[in-house]
Length: 218
Image 1 (cartoon, helix red, strand yellow):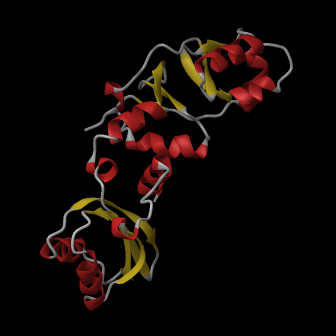
Image 2: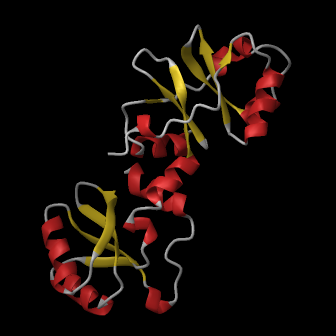
């Protein structure tokens, strides 16, 4: 089920209020991480970006308390929930806390890449297809039937846009019978608004993290 507790790394400590800004900054730089984490009496207090630390005057981390970024994920969460935090806070590392908000460790972007590279949505070669229909007309059962009756497979999908009137679904599918799939969707009232097909020698998606962010941010 991809629970956070199964992916926690513990080789990157949280700093105390009394630790110096310079020491924390150098530590983050050595590890190559975007943020350092601060605790107060064992309880997670917040995060500071390494770039912000570099521009800060000398002193202790406590002097920067008003600048702490309050983001973390609980150990009983799902790794899907970390993707939005990576994006919002421009981070490559997210702190993990327990029920009492004790700092337990972290999960990194590399952990996410490693896990999701196992899944067909990212590992299989195929075509990317985005279809649009009205929200009232949307039926995943019908969409899956269209794909499968054309002897193709769905490797994964995500909702790429939704409002009161329209619904867009982006899918990665096996690249067999693509023209037939196009025609069938249009016959059933779906509009094919975007496609990347291998047989047109187009790159499917070069930036996997960008693809993953689109997959989870809606």
